[in-house]
Image (cartoon, rainbow, N blue to C red; front, side, top):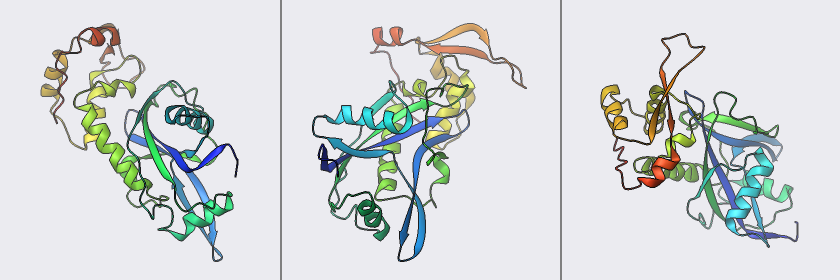
Length: 246
């Protein structure tokens, strides 16, 4: 093991990406041979922190090394440190020893990140060959390493709670978006169909969602009006109600 790494503290990245249809999460594939049988499963991008890094710095470094992503929204969740988080599945310890990591106790601090995957906005995304996007709704029966399903569920609940009071949906959208795209984000994250009229009434009360003199192009349906999120207006009017109780 690299002597510059802290053997008992890691950072994992729960990267959510929206592609106009699904909320996706980024996972790294791995193969393990246990007692002559080959297993294939998935894990979050993550690694041990370095001795000269704080957690935020480590999270940014690890995400960039594994995905090429940087300067995106990131938020620390909570520490996960169950006694058996590395040992509850035999294949996890086999994999750790194969990468020269003999420790049986590692506390991980996950971060969740938000990116927009549509309209070539992921040009800076440089995934390694083992990485893949999965729709969150399809993960129930996927083999996922360690306690990463628990981490994913906590990240999803955190995202839902914060979407009710913070304008995080715009981290998942292109710079110019339609109200249908915005509504779709809330529907897929909360797994609930929303009334179009009521949703747009809420939007009409938010001055930092600015209508543009532009419409969608290259679409098969009637082109929708485009909008943008004004961060400047939002910063000036933080007391303005942002209640998306679903």
